[in-house]
Image (cartoon, rainbow, N blue to C red; front, side, top):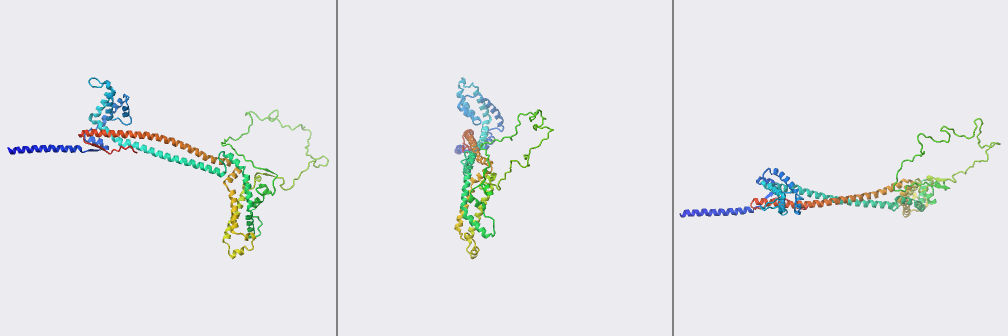
Amino acid sequence: MSGHAATSQDVEMSTICGSIYLQQLSHQEQDIPIDIHAAKLVDWLVSRRHVQKNWSDNVQVIREKINNAIQDMPEHPEVTRLLSGTYINYFHCLKIIEILKETEKDSKNILGWYGSQRMKDWQEVVKLYEKDNVYLAEAGQLLTRYISYEIPAIKRQVLKGVQMQQDFDRRDAECVKGASDAKKRYTQMCKKIGIEGEKVKHELVDLLKTLPSELDSIADSAKTLSSARALYADFVSFVVKNNNSECVPLLKYIAEHGNVTTYEWTYGEPPCQIEEPKLDIELEDDCVETAADEIDFGDLQDSQEIDFGADSPGGDIDWGNLDADQPVEIDWGIGEAEGDIATDEIVVEESGVGGGIARDTDAMTLLLNPKTRQQFIDELYEVEGFLKQRRLELQTEGSILSMNQFASAPASVQDQTVEKTDEMLSIIQSVIAKISTTKLQHLFLISSSPRYVDRVADSLRSKLILVDKLAETQKAIAERKSGVAEEQKLLMSKLSVFVDRTKELQENIEEHISKRYKGRPVNLMGVNLSKNV
């Protein structure tokens, strides 16, 4: 008996220990979390047989009922929030039913049933969702779509908008810089020409009036080159024997006589009259080209003819009262008695060009005439080149050979030093710089071609047009940037809604799966729900 009792006690103890062990094991298992990758959630649910493989076939029916039920909804802020932003799922339907319990409470009968069609429609939707756990599969699919496609797509759009705004800022800065450069070039060009730039053509024409005084000033400056010119002439006459040609004749003539007319330079005496070429400059900013003028013959019809003053179109020319039978003699102005010329006598003008009229280029001054002005500039460069060469020679001279070479040279050549040469070189270079300014070059071109005024005005106007175009571009960029900024706000708001709804969906899925495993914690992995782009 004692052995049998001992055996029973052992079995009982063993059963108790086993029960305790199972309780501990169950408790430990309940604390173990269930980790599910969100991208494979639907497959996990099917593999664990929580949902059927053909669950998607039932979703289409549910969606149609939801669309019909949405058509008749009470005005409630929470309902509006649930129906906007994202796809309506099972958990939204539960919240809608809770709201309808308040809005449709008047339709509740004594048995606790709601007579409202709205409530019946949504309760039917919930039942269809809960059948075979279709709602879990759809919720898992929605979660996968949100985290894999919807939210990343919105973030890409936001990034694209940020890049567009940066590009707009860059293009706006380029427009600002381009407009500033165009204005700067416009101001610099006007400054070089010597105008303000308010009315370009009028200012250019007014500036042309200052050209004679400018040229007279240059002609006066040529008088300061007498020593350099004399040195050059003496050097040439010493080096080139029997040289009958005069060195730099135009430079000498202008230094002695000033900026006289080309006529006086050519013929050696001033004209009695000067007919200066007229400049026909169109001062209108906008020139309208018209068709070629035609001769106006009046309002003649095709059948009309020109009236020659006769009775008929075929009338003859009236030669006066001539009789065809009477011989007519032509009066040649010869005297009857001796056949000499009557009182008229031939007046023979004096020889030469005294009393001549200067026209065209002859009427231009020497520095205004392109041909003589170029000759004047060439002679300046000729003297400058000589002085540079002579200065170099003076710096390297000092041998007995060079001293003997210039022993018989004129005193002006022998007494020359580097310092004197530098002084003359500085003077002639200042004259060259004076006649080579941008302002004078424009004035020369204007005086020789009135159309050049149009070209200068068009060139300046093009820079202002560029400024206006860039300003319009800036305006368009600002409008587009504003539109993109508004779109960015909408996208960020949409992103925030999607992230919040996805978090809610994730929590609901984890909660419902946890209930099926006795409250074990469920973690959906691979879910990035950050609102930062």
